[in-house]
Length: 229
Image (cartoon, rainbow, N blue to C red; front, side, top):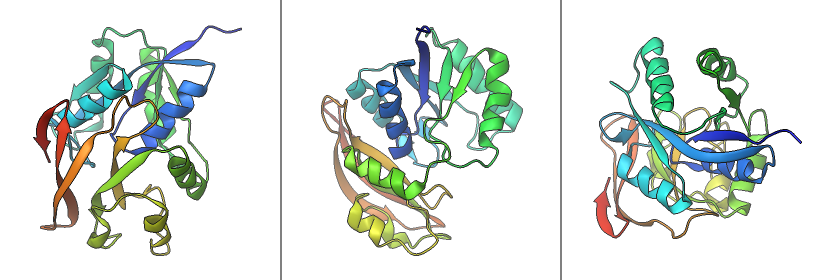
């Protein structure tokens, strides 16, 4: 039998990375050694999640988190790639592979391989190419509990922000909106899933509606202390 490959999971704080993690933990070829995330000044882009919340997720999963700082949300590709490679190398973890929750064959896999494979790491895509409605159903069936924390109002009405990602919410989506939000229509935050030692206790406050992107602002009990977003 081939030796297990140590894999680190790219962790956005949302549902796709959570499902990727669960699949990898069930795959006899891999041993999950940690999570990694990028952030700008302590905030994870897209989900707009405070880094402290991501740290709390990792702690509940019993996994180390490699937090990689970026100089801006959309740095030039060479800058982004250097930050990620240097961050993983400095982590102290034995890494053979990096896993991503990407779903579509749109060139992203080749892009990631282009800078990670020269550094010595395999790229793994546990969800790539699968039908997104089936993935959404699997997320619910596995008990991955998530809340919609960001909505792009150019693709989806802002009223969808703040809701729980559940069967009723999915059924209400307009035609053309991907049920996994893979076109950037929405992003989610995982508050509970298999492997969490305890859920994250979230109290919604309001939906910030000031611009194109609407954000759920909430208070979260993070390891016994009050945090907010």
